[in-house]
Image 1 (cartoon, helix red, strand yellow):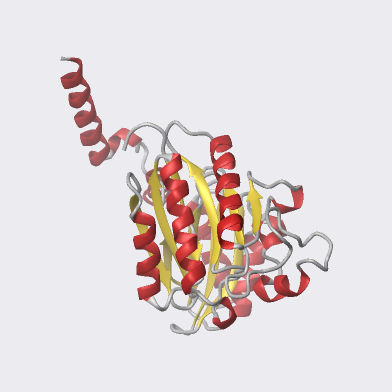
Image 2: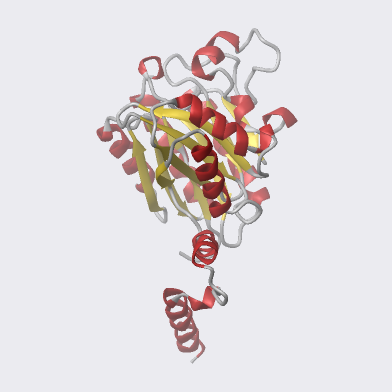
Length: 312
């Protein structure tokens, strides 16, 4: 990949029927110049996250095609899962990578959102940097009450109408939130208990909205298939609140409630710097630098050699 690059990380309300997820992924990667970077499905959340990257126009087309397949294949009236959702294609965030800005992604979000309404008749909410109203900067406000409440309230409750489209939910696909944001780390921590109330208490302790760490969103969930409670976390700026700080806080709070952390997982992708920061903390390195990582040195050497060849 070269030139302008954008990442898109749409979340779809299907994590159990992998044939449906396959169809959505194939629709997205059928666009020229779009690369599939990651795919993650969870049965308990009943949700899949597909990560693609490429030039802005190509990624916008891929995002639309993914939403189009989700609208055709997912019936939200039959959907059950632990993760909050308002639509078959629940959220479609665009993230600036190389040679692109957040403003570029805001424009792309508006264009794709308009097309979702015009061609699929799914109403669209714009969130984070793409928000046209201050109360929709936070996705939680858009998703309040989920699909069921939105179906009742859209068109009747002040402040619940979409940014793009008529104030009526699509009968089976609901609505879609389209946004532009910086890189986000989706991080889940599992506890040695099925008691969701403990996960809820820990989430309240660490999240920014309850007075916890800045740039941290968190909620408690129950993973029925594993009979474990989970603290589901989004880190919106891992340099302000690093991964290891959140992990240690959850571990400490879990111990206060008499339980342990049994595992954690990354949903989607994570920057190498976040892992290096965690490694530096836990291993107490005195001299860990980005150039200390072997693979980075090799990549830099290859890039330098390629540049030299082009110059000759």
